[in-house]
Image (tube, rainbow, N blue to C red; front, top):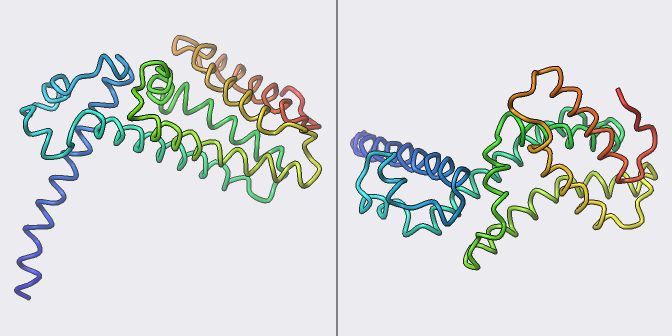
Length: 213
């Protein structure tokens, strides 16, 4: 009993620390998406979270570690959303699985998590020290699409002689969706354009049966 009693205060402290750390990451995400790596400063993060800059170093050793935490948080969120969308259509054709992934990716970038598009739209401003984190994020994201594409090729659903090239083109097209589907659009226009994007992007894998809704 004494051990449990002693553990409770420590647990509360840990939870408070986790909440504050999550708050710092959220604030850094907002600044990073608005200003890019070069424009984000620890001073701004500290001011917005109402803590002293020195206190930030109790949570993160420096700017790069904080940015890595932002990238990891965004990556985990995107991967989780994509896996959830994929799980809902498991058992259907690989074409339907691919369409579900494309649809969810566009929704992430234009509706549910537009900060993802903003953060990853600053490729030239990333320092070399973060190149590993960026590559890992892209690899984990690509792996979800790649598993479906390779499955579709093996099953004969996709006629795609150069899957690596096709995947790069697919990601490039989807990354531009936040420029095509704007916040000012009404819900119906967004939905229509999103489905047109799904139809068109699916063709990159040589998928048959891809028709406009």
